[in-house]
Length: 569
Image (cartoon, rainbow, N blue to C red; front, top):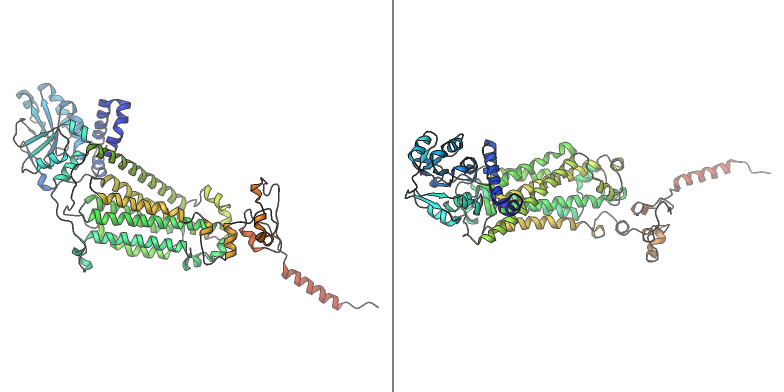
């Protein structure tokens, strides 16, 4: 398990299982997963561990190792350690001390290993029994082997700076520091260069670095989200929306007085999510990719790999939005330029170690953010599925006070239009959630304040979006008249029989729900002369269509007929 679950949850695990049993359970779980090729890759990639630099490679007892950083365990832990330590970043495992009685245990641990295994034999008989089963033997007094029992990352990284030096951690180090200790020591011991600045970019786009292209994508997403918000709070629909629906905004409002606000809510949430993605991409570009963090590129790549394909949701919804398509076509080549190469030179600067209690409190916050991101991903997946299938959930139809078939009867293209907005929002939410989860899991380090500000900016963009359209009376639309806007935001009381009579006397009227009268069970209200405002009232008002054209036609017919009849006497 990673540090962000090990430290926050180990107290609860110890209370349930006991301290020793919980530790052995954690080690056994890592060993079980790490013994499988796919599981080892999952741990190595999921924990954010990367290949150590070449300067940390060397030899231990004449055995080549990828990194001069290992762990020394007793024979009772050898089998689990050999399978669990490689994905965590250890370069080798030492089993010590080993007697002749432990030979069989060590042979079983060495079978199928993927990491060098050395043994410190306690007697010649044990060495002879294991010579053909292990990679080498240590004596315990090698001058370049530093055995550490203190979980200090700085001390271990300093020891690795000496050429040929080997650091061996005792099991208590991982118990105290957590499974991420190897990766933290490797990062601290990695030589880094100065990070590039803006003046190093140059004017030739062919030589722009990956982080600059990534920054442009982030800024483009932010601008697109702000533009979508401006459209939603202004005209709501653009010309191609009107062309696809064959309806103007006033007609939508007349069909259902809550429909426009429903569309605004879906679209403003999409706009807020786009701004949040832009904030995440901008932070990853400047704070991560620019400084050579390999995981930053992977976060960027995985998030974009989910977000950009949502353009093809139109294959299910049937509605192609030109502005969405144009934005994707402009930003996608920049995205490819940002992720096509892995960062080569590390350019980060690690902050010195701080108090351990402070780090553990930060790990609790890290766990909470990861859980939040997972919840957002699940929510985005559900929204996408709903948008591509049923489109509406019961609360949507309760708010609209109508059914899907009624909306389809109003306009067959109305439901696919809503589906496009809803499914697109779900896909964008999943892309943002992946970035939040992986940035929190891989980028959480002391001194990396840009991670905090990136997540804070994304949270601010996401948390502000619903409040922009929750009050329909404050929404201004250019194509709805003042009268219909008043009628939709402050409906006339149901006790009044006619809208024109109620408007100047609204203070003396009382709503039926205020006095406990049920409509239409106890009272029915009807208008006259086909009152236009009847569509905007809550509850809806029935009205009589007098049919002036028919009345005029019948009156004219009677008049003509009377002239044709002879006058009596």
